[in-house]
Image (tube, rainbow, N blue to C red; front, side, top):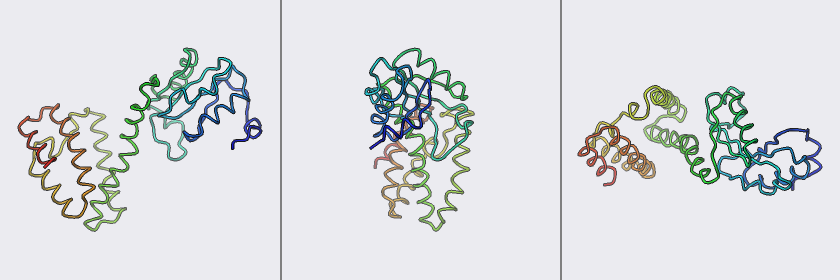
Length: 240
């Protein structure tokens, strides 16, 4: 249980109290804070997927509530400069708090964007796909290299500059121009060879990942000018 006495001992008068705890604890902590803080103090959570309703217990007396979620990775302590250029998704129960949160984001060098409750889950899915799951993807790529005798350290050391180059290309030219490789070229034979090699090495789960991500890449390639006939050959290779 959270001690109200412990909370009150650490509190100081503030305009906004940020609730930076694990998602399951947000509602309880916010409710305790509401008991201890004046009604003029807004309470804001920093969760990605949680809606404003997670703070319903803190709204008594007309208190403003909000959310303020950096679209950035913080697995450990990082300096304020880490916010620079990053998006911060925010929302608020009133326009006054919304303006304060947007201003705070800009003061951090970030880009504010209001994300209402109905968009929160998909907004957070995009964040997870482009961050946490990328780490999982690097892990899968490293596993492939480890299967041919590389050490984990050698594998990651080889993959990171490649990833950095891809991100740099996307930043400079956009998704379509940055896309390269056998799917963009319409090289179905290489796609089949990849899948055969993965399955032959006992890496069936990674082969399934390849098929799923390959299909997503194919859709992008078709939208970027890949010949539809070659696109269908790639699709057959991915689903065959």
